[in-house]
Image 1 (cartoon, helix red, strand yellow):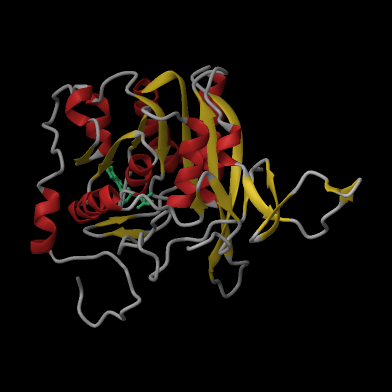
Image 2 (image 1 turned 90 degrees about the vertical axis):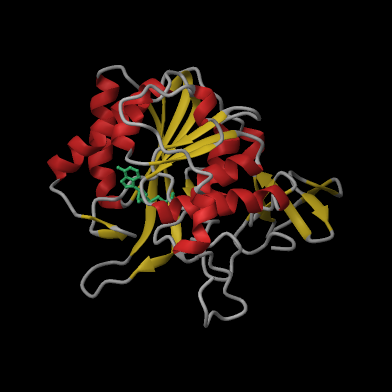
Length: 317
Ligand SMILES: C[S@@+](CC[C@H](N)C(=O)[O-])C[C@H]1O[C@@H](n2cnc3c(N)ncnc32)[C@H](O)[C@@H]1O
């Protein structure tokens, strides 16, 4: 762990030497070799998705969660992702989505994360594939990130999109597993009894249906146990919603751009199988370290005993 860190700073990071034992737990697929489900289940595959996806087993996963590089310049450890033209980003996206579709089961779901600008191109790709009857677009979730990227002559970017697509109209959606617990501001009673709300030691609450606007999740920050040195890490709470809604215990969740492993770790905590691909060795090490931590601690910040709480309101967070 780096020196000079404040005692409350829990950011996961380590030297190459410290990371070595975690890297050894990863799977390095050989080029042009077909992969069997058994050899990649519950594994982190270290390498280039565009090469590995071609060799993945068909009908492998019930759920794919993809958080690809957004179409902007960003350094991912040893690699700089360069902004492309919309047409180039369209081809790039269509390429990896097409490679992912055969990996998804016929009743499977795929979520794709993006910022507002990449979302325009990704929507275009998804509409093209829908017209070719390769998938069905079900919804677009908008996630308010809370922490925005400031701009001098523009509105700061405070939200991201998550596209929800399925392979067909037969798919899993566990509504009760993703209800939101909200405080009741005006506790209305009928015949002296609470109308559609409940009383608890923490106050009055109602469990509500989740909408496609998410304002209850912040990006991981330095004092959170899940935080790593990855530059664009997603929160486990965000992944937990997707995984609980769109898969069942024992299902397989696959992430073709797994970064610090948030999808794999959350899948493991929720009793699903996982598999992720990441090309940066340092991020593969973070993933394996977090997977090891998940053996002891299955806590997901903001989610407790089957309930998603509003931001910063979950007991013992
Ligand atoms: C937006 S980040 C994903 C972050 C992740 N959701 C998390 O919570 O940590 C995208 C990741 O894709 C990886 N990546 C980019 N191109 C890749 C490729 N061709 N093959 C495998 N990984 C790739 C990057 O190194 C980066 O870690």
